[in-house]
Length: 239
Image (tube, rainbow, N blue to C red; front, side, top):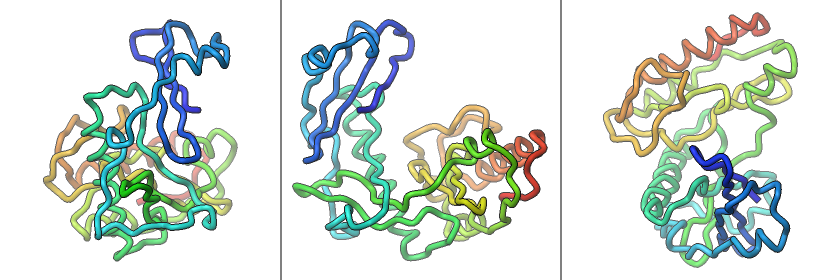
């Protein structure tokens, strides 16, 4: 179950549940979730129709028929503070991210998270099946020294394809046991000049923007590198 605090309403809580058949339930409670009984949670949960969350699939989408056979992670629609009027946006976000991964599936790079395809049920995309990564750069820095942080050309690879990530930050960069980087979360990855559906992460941009541009990634990479160097525990580069 995913808990999602409501901004500006500290005495309320929101929570969601996806059952084994990918039916979605969502609820708002008048009190904090930690104070709710199981009976309370069940009373506040309401089922959200699948068509309000999941976009229809298409012939351009790679389908994963048995995700259980893959040691992967299924990225599902983000339901934090769900509102019925957000359904169209959720559709677009999931479908556009799938489109970005489909393009990169034809032009892979070892430092961009591996995409296996989409989990599809009832003619709709339920989630993106991605390679499971170890830990984020953000968490790794809290745990101890980063002995090696490889310098790779994944940003250049994206930009050569005419794409910008637009949301690079330490939570969207994963590390394996050898501190090799894997970039995740392509929800804002679009071709240069295209309108963005979601904003970047505060603190990792030089400006607020609404279109996809290479300079957004370049600015974020500089900020991440400065953050690593200020901590004094990194001896590598990410760009």
